[in-house]
Amino acid sequence: MSQQNTHPDCQRAMDAKEEHDAAERAAMIAVCLISSARVIAKLDSEYTAYSAQYLVDMAGRKNEPAPDAQLSSLTIQDCLSYLVDIATPKPESEPSEIDERRNTLTLKDCLEYALKEGIPRAEHWTHVGCVHKPPPFASLMPRVHMKGELVEAETAEEGSELLMLQPVGAKLHVFSPDFELVKDEGFYEGPSGPESRYVGLRDVMITGSGKTSKGDPFLEVKIVYKKEESYLKVSTTRMLTSLPNDSGEESQLTEPTGLLVDFITPRFSS
Image 1 (spheres, rainbow, N blue to C red):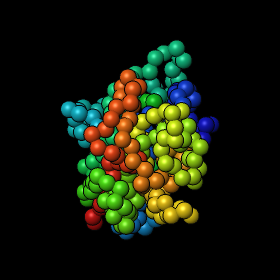
Image 2: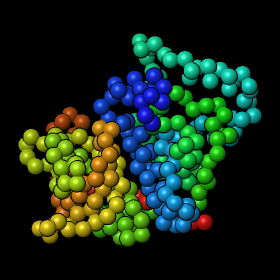
Image 3: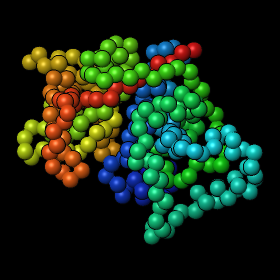
Image 4: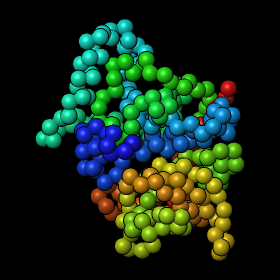
């Protein structure tokens, strides 16, 4: 959404952070996987954008009633109060409410919710980064309901097999400045030396595979990093034997791991 159409509260919140939070990153990759998988399964006649922000707003809520269950107590006054609230920009000094759920929302959580509850098309819900609570009439918004299952894999080899049918989600171990140096169509091999700093795991969508001119195998991934979308080639042979712990010290892993882990993809049925 262009800046001129963005609510001042949302624009201020986006400008204040360097990167999308964990929930936004997971949801953006989730809808890319959903859109791709539905075209391949011939459930959508063309690539259709689904709402990432809907998953940010709704997925991963534990012990809360489903949106449909909240309609029985909905009143006209509830709707009017909501519209008045979002139409009034908040003072910059007013702290925003912190939703701890967003720190732990995963790609799998988002995909599971979409399969269970359905998901609106992008034009039927607000933009990524919206800071307002979901409307009390959220369940009245049109959703595309879906049937299918999630298929998971542990290794790059298994992930590559899933890729033969459709794009696959995964998590990428990101190191800086190594990632920044190759993020635009480059070949990423993880940490290159003592100056490398571990950033953490980031959700990605694997879109293809191949080999470099030197014969090194890779998986091509799409990633949203620091609010920028990019593609890069990730080595499938580089293995990590240690990662920094919470205190920043190197901790040996129980077994070597690749740069890409936790492979997952939705398989839809009609």
